[in-house]
Image 1: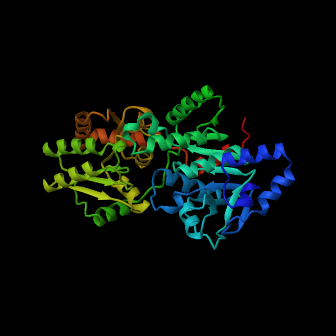
Image 2 (image 1 turned 135 degrees about the vertical axis):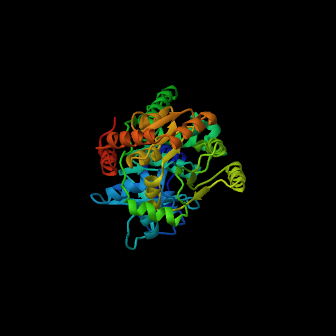
Length: 427
């Protein structure tokens, strides 16, 4: 009622104030006073009781990896058997709006027709958050929805990296992420994307008891271990398109940020170039921050004649083809909730050099990956040299990857698992 009257998601304080006044006086007089005020409502308002998904970030970016990939792959499949109301947060007006046609298309990888651009108030809905909401106003509104709207709420749990390894997070992120966690504390259920992420979220939930908060149910819904393949012809076309030459390709997929460990990767690559190993290093990823040292080192290495190709915003088909033509990939991240590049590479039978702990070890061990301490660039260099020079090792790891990943789970399986979590009863 407050949302409809004011045209915005009410704050916890305004709800509690309303309830106190209602109990102190009577409902009719309090509602009458509110309804006589001149609220500035600039759009139509709809109360939505079905499935609602907050896609604020995904609907406004062309990035195709990580969180955005999970959101799009899930929602595009849900739309086949469920009407989903996609909403985006309007910070200036403190409310959720129905996603526009362009935003809905970006969020669900589909073509949609004209859409009414009105205010949406979720009420007794099934509310889905496939993103990380660190904006203060948005996190506060989501907390209100979870706590007071009577909705069944589900959030995807990617990781707790801004807390567990805060030194790798961007400026202000640890504090913003903690506020986001205070919102998730009011959700009904969280679905971590891996067993490793499940451990992190379960530990966090255990801490909530000290504040007298029950917290959400934690039920892992692991991301899929299978992706589409690409033909040999596509591999050759991509090699020609990117002017990669005939040298072996070493591929690294991941955003340019401290957690992805690009500095140590470049150090390890330079050690191998100095030893005379011939290869082209291809770095795929966008969303860069604190990347000045990485960019400077790339420029220095290029001046020495090192072949380094950097790509951002390329089509998925190009990425799949790069996985297929690479001799091996490197994903030695400092911390990950899952590690999709590990799965993507191994699904195509391409060996991976990855970190020897957490979700990356779980995904790669005995499945076609070599493990290494990502904090030790010299150890990374030694492992890279093995993969560059030992054809039998590469063939053995490739065969292991193919055997270990077939049959495997798919995005269809993942979407169904999440949908079951959304519709299940919580405690």
